[in-house]
Image (tube, rainbow, N blue to C red; front, side, top):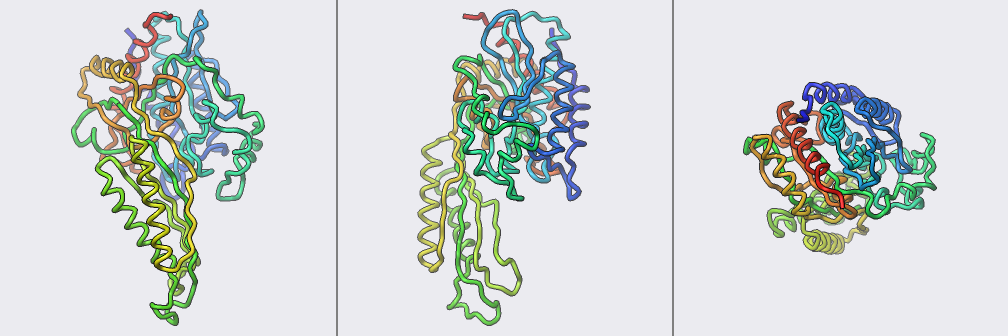
Amino acid sequence: MAQINSERIWQRLNTLAEIGCDPSGGLSRFSFTKDYFQACELVQEWMQEAGMTVSFDAAGNLIGRKDSVKHLPVVAMGSHIDTVKNGGMFDGCVGVVSAIEVVQALNESGLNYDYPIEVIAFSEEEGSRFGTGLLGSRALVGEIDSSFLFHKRDAEGKTIAEGFRSVGMDPERISEAKKPSGYYRAYLEMHVEQGNVLDTHEESIGIVEGIAGYSWLKATLSGRAGHAGATPMLLRKDALAAAAEIILQTENIALDMGDRTVATVGKILAHPNSINVVPGSVDLAFDIRDVDNQRVIHATDAIMSSFAQICKKRKIEGTIQESLRTDGVHLPKRMTELVERAASKTGKPYRKMISGAAHDANIMAKITDVGMIFAPSQNGISHSPDEWTDKRHISDCSQALLYAVEYLLQEPST
């Protein structure tokens, strides 16, 4: 019987965490940078140690493949190794390292199977550099064309296309990353929960039944800058005061929608950003999520309507538009039952749950059956240097991932 090597997983996670350390704390390892490709080289070595052949596709996804003797659909696993700014060492990386370990454990066990296996480290999952998440998986299902790469820019003004070219990739060829229909048999992703449900209930494994979709909005408010002392209150066009009202109304809209809808204004840029100047303009970024796509649409429409009303009332010019939308998904019963069977086999306590965070699994669900396993996040902290998942929980979830893959490999081919 195959067994994962928890020490090997833990050692690899800690080694990976040495790349991309930010002087201000945590990891800032953005896609298509020197640090990112240093991390890719390390992951590539581990894939090869696990007996896989390794390549980059036209979207920058790093793919390790273990072939079989038959031409059958692929059993795939994966996640990502890019981070948010000042992120933690577990988000994404756990899924990649544990998937590699599953393949290595299967090789060491001598188990024979017919299906090929792939481990995918998706590019630009977080969207931290170019402001567009899930790039690699979206390219893999055919949602990204080359023109898209010439419009999205990072903080330095460089386009994704320039990022591609800086590492020898051709942005004009990104469509080649798309996989043909029927390429995959199933996709499994292990990830840290990024919330506090499992930790609160002292459970080791999360069985994901659905993944929230999200809408990202970008907005600009244009008022009139003025001297903070010399501009009377009734004569002001304070863009930041308008933004504050919009943020509070966004919170109220989400609260009125029910306990599964969440809305966040996570980014504010006020100009000129000086203590003695009435803010003349403000840039905002919104994040609205729910597993029910209609509720995301409803909340998004309500926020945009409220934005327009507040701007009109305060005589502020405002523009707001949707920059990205990803559909929520309910995972197939076949896969949730398979993952539950695998979790049960570990003997550890588990829970069925919804993922509030988006993952590459959202996108992969468009072309194949998807299953997800969550490992507890201590105190629910994620996207932070304080992010932590215990070694024992990573071990338990990795073993469940291995069992789930074994079940898929042992299913008869049709």
